[in-house]
Length: 335
Image (cartoon, rainbow, N blue to C red; front, side, top):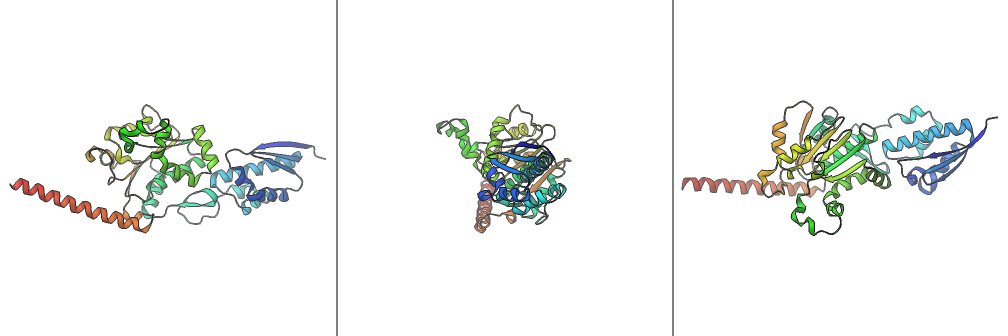
């Protein structure tokens, strides 16, 4: 008769409430599938009592279930059944793809996919390019797609950390008048990045990642002097960087690093639009191997349908104003 043991299993990196299911439904399912083991769960610790061989098998399957959750971001009754009644090889294989454009599985089984031609192009280029530029209008999904790629790389252990940064230009000189410490002052300007991460990583896990430094969100000025190894790094709102700032950022790239630079050249907040270094950097680096450039347009806008019309209207206004300015210049030259 096999010796009975008690084994404590620590389930790290997951939200225990999602792992156990609503009203412990998945935990009860595990007990039904493993009738020879007594299972007691307390937070992120599971105690398994039973024969040594049965407990060892349970631990392997539980670890495989946790790995699945970390990789795909969701668990279902079918997944639990597969984990505890099928071969581990079946569980570790890719789940049936809903379509070829799935980037990563977000919270509660949500599917984050490349929805437009240029989003798909960005995903494809990310497979072979270590530096990517993604520029285009608001709402085209360039930053969201980039963050999804970063989360996928972290889940698949291709990198050790995600670093998201953007210039805090909008704050300007008013930053000192805002309440709180520096992080509290800057967080409102970084909120869009938090919003995207919250769609893809469970809240408790994201908080832990931030505390550990696995996920870092910081203003661009904090990048100076650093070497970013084993990281997926995204510079957002890059149209608000000068050429020297964007050069500083790009030269932070270390070993096993992937950089994506996103921006919208129609939304420059610098005192002089000509100071923006984004288009200058793209023109300088265009054509270099392993550097990809994706230019999004209004056809990629995935927000409310009115956003496309708003972008169209402002583009027409800008063209009209540019035409009037050019006309005035010519008349002045003639005089």
